[in-house]
Image 1 (tube, helix red, strand yellow):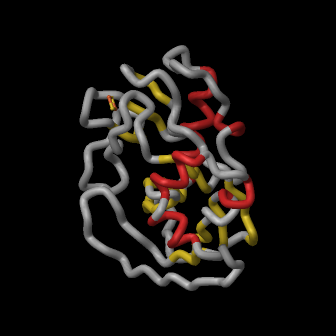
Image 2 (cartoon, rainbow, N blue to C red):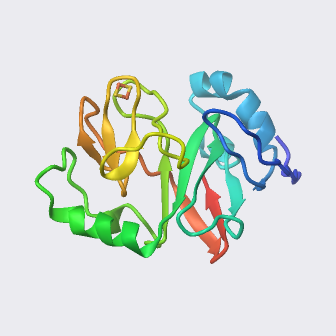
Length: 182
Ligand code: FES
């Protein structure tokens, strides 16, 4: 695999589960995604995995908006949390209703940006709640339509059967406006 850079400009697309924004994939990430099942079976080393990253321009994402990007063939939710959501997430740190207790601060690098893998930790459905038109949990988070799990504004599970919080992928802010996932 070469280190050739590839620019992918993806226009917003109306689909049930994915709202894509412009992303910039680096170094043959498209190839890595297309061959993911094969790579997964081969248990790739770090040099292969390092190509499986995507950069997201955060500037078009309005405060309060949630968008989904594709990473390693699956959805990653990015929530540009407004102050009310941030306050709620932090206030719930000590809630007795947490099934998988974790402080909100341990799940974000910037409180304004929650970045989580959009796959239910029960059996892998994609939770709803990315748009205002979709049902959300009463915790203003996500609702899994398969078996009813509910997540809060930090992506923490508040109602099962899901056993764990929505996972946080590896990511870093390359600048205040650009995040690199993977
Ligand atoms: S897959 Fe989400 S609750 Fe079962």
